[in-house]
Image 1: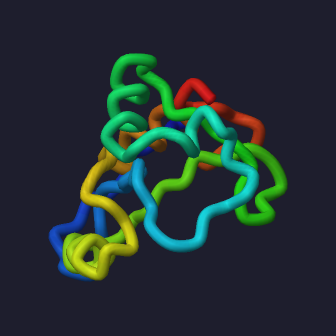
Image 2: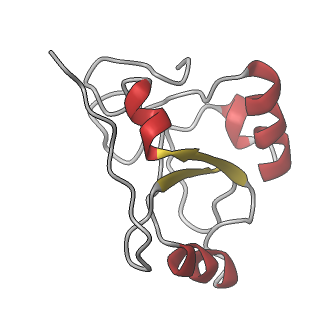
Length: 113
């Protein structure tokens, strides 16, 4: 089976990347492990960089462990951070990288979960 590279776009309403924010303000899932919940956004980012993995866990009624990624545009990210819904701290990946590492495939753990 031949696999093609993802098409990229230079459009204001379509992102070619995804972001895993490490700090969220407001409502939090009760399913987040205490070892993660007790860390600041900067400490979570440092743990991801040192461990070279994003830990997946069940959250907000998901059917299993997940890694939350947003494909928000630059304008949307600016708004989310500006409204203090998320802290300006996280890891960004190209969609191609996620695709190449089987992101989104059921049962697959592309980020070392």
